[in-house]
Amino acid sequence: MTPPEKRYFKLFANAFHQDSDLTRLYAMLDTDKEIEDGAITKKTGIKNLPVSRSNLRKLILKAMRSYNETSQQLQLRNIITDMEWLEGKGLTDEALKEMRRAHKFGVEHEVYGDFANLMLMQRRSLDTKDPDQFTQEYEKLIADTEKYASLAADYATSMLFNSYVVKYTNIVGSYEAANVLHRKQQLLIKAQERLSKTKTIRGRLLLLITVQGILSAMGRYEECFKTFKQIFAIYDETPYVKENPIMLYMLILNSYCNLCDFTARHAEHEKGLESFITGFEELGIPRLDKAAQLKMRGVILFQRTSFARRTGNTRFLNGIDDELMDVVNHQGMGNLPEAVNSAILHYIGYNLQTLNLVAAGEWLTRFYNFKHSKLSRSMYLAARLLEVIMFYEQKDFDIADTKAINLYKTIMEFPDEMQGEHQKVIGVFLRRLCQWQPGNKTHKTEMQKWIDDVAEHTGKRDAFLKEVFAFFDITGWLKKKFL
Image (cartoon, rainbow, N blue to C red; front, side, top):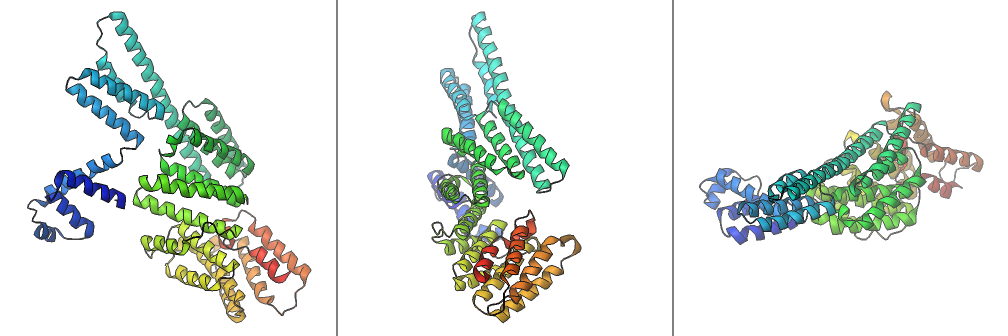
């Protein structure tokens, strides 16, 4: 439970169960989750602990239903529940009021999941004695059921198609075989066809996201920005879709920031990042659970540090040291999520670019202490590359030379399945970096050719090479140092 959820539960529980077995049990479990049953019984005096645990679980779920009543799906379910209770008490007119309210709410917010039950309940309210009126009302009820069942299927189909495209593009990645490119083009045509037919706002939103994902996978970035414009127009016109689901809205903003970053559209990136941070604070924190909040905080930290490193704009760096450490401490000292690792490496790169070498060294030390797994091999190598640059900037050329040689040996000893063009690029870069130290003679034409080669290879769609070179402007730094 999040801190706000805990506060709400305590208020909820104390309102009905003040100083009861349940409140004492919760207080103890909240402070010590590993406490043994015997100790709980002794400290609380609870005689039937299994029953109390079960009742506490029910009370927590009841409180969280109340806490999360702003959820559109839950609001509709609550209205239907109220209607059932009123109907059970014979209060038909009051039940009909709730029925009309449920129908209006479901239509306005496109919450069709419970419409089948709602329609089945409505049939019980058709008690007119006039046969013609009875027939008309039943026919309308059947027509409405068909209509809203169709809209629910429309949205469900859009969701399934989006899921399929996302997973397919992740599987094929940047693979550019002719059959894959042809398949992506087919998917784009299908997505656009579905988009032209969908009758729900949520379905349109999902299909626009699908189209944007395919365009991005095909490298058609200008069309991606036009699609994002349509997506954000929907959010502006129908704000309720931001909340259901809120995580989708967060992921869209993250994708937009990534695209702005990749295409160096810094002004748009700044506005997108501002919306991302505001959306998380105003919508994400109140609705996301603790794990989702922590994940999204890591993603936002990555966006903030990446933006600062690439642009030199410090607007989003206020308090970044403390926030990074807070996320790391909450995650523990094991394997950090990729977004947090990237945030740390971008921040190290930023400090190197601004020649804040002390801060860069401190964060490098922390990064090494976070015990990375083999899955983060490229990021670990990226950290070692940043370390070489740091010693070079400190004019500790002997240490830089030793670090570079060791890194070169590590890369050249990769297993066969990891060998490729990136070995040659990084290996040549490290060797020549040591050769062209200040004071050594430099042939500018040869140096320019080498820098151009590095830029060419890092610009290719080699995922490994991109990760290793992603956290520092290598070519810009080389030009500044040697040309």
